[in-house]
Amino acid sequence: MSITVKSTDKTDTVDVTDDVAAEVPSDLTRGTCTVFVQHTTAGVVVNEPESRLLSDIETALGRIVPDEERYSHDEIDDNAAAHLRAIFLGESVTVPVVDGDLDLGRWQSILFVECDGPRTRTLEVTTTPAVSD
Image 1 (cartoon, helix red, strand yellow):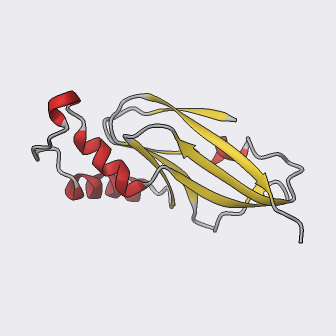
Image 2: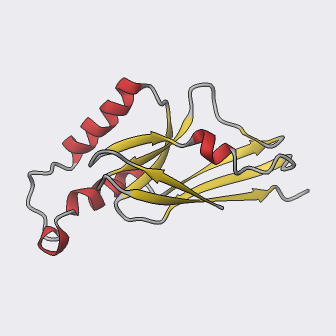
């Protein structure tokens, strides 16, 4: 199953929890849901979708990997900072599923983080039933 995400800025954080939850089969009583981004300049994380925190994520990524730095990869397509930021984020998350619902904590959401936008991206959503003992 795939979902499409549109970012609006160069660095943008989008809460995709509801879109992912819609892909979880209601009859999956126990298992996992993995969300994977098939791009090397974006990531997926689990965290709180509070607007100031989302801004802080973008600020922190800019501090960890500054745009102003000279990177060798920029000689090819001028987006090395985006690739490096994505390394820190990771390309996937796996969340438990219980009774057809994502078993996230109270403040947790699945966040897509774009580092080379604005773009339209595809996230792959895979559910796996738990193996019976």
